[in-house]
Length: 160
Image 1 (cartoon, rainbow, N blue to C red):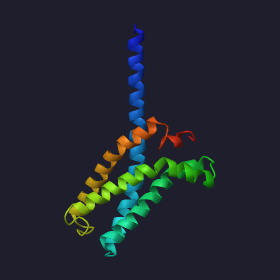
Image 2 (image 1 turned 90 degrees about the horizontal axis):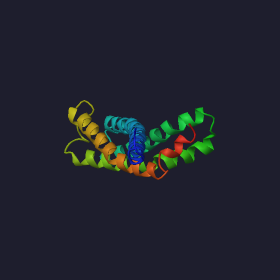
Image 3 (image 1 turned 45 degrees about the horizontal axis):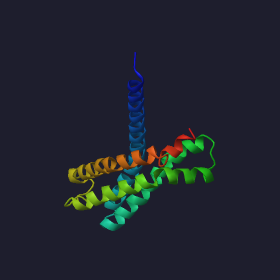
Image 4 (image 1 turned 135 degrees about the vertical axis):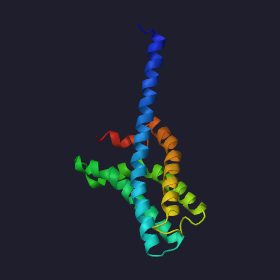
């Protein structure tokens, strides 16, 4: 039989695991929206022969659009009005998406030739994959911190 201190330690581990799980889920959720928008933006900008700034601007706009959309779709399907869903998505995802966008675009710019490599080049796709994974790794502790304080993506869970 567990003693009181053992029970409390076990309860703390369960809470910690739950927090880690929710933070990972939130990070993967945001990373999915970012990746869809980022990849689409990079494909469009590269295919059109745009410069780095224009391509990154499009990718960032699309990353936010898809990130917010992935949060709002279930809320809207659940009956929440658009006027109520938008502020929830903004509160839930803005910091996470912003971090991911800053990190992954900085990495893409830092890897020599990545932005100019073209859609058929392994350098482009490998660089984008690495950049997105690192961006998710950087966003995870921030998401965890926000969730622990009742902010960030956790605000969405009250509507599920």
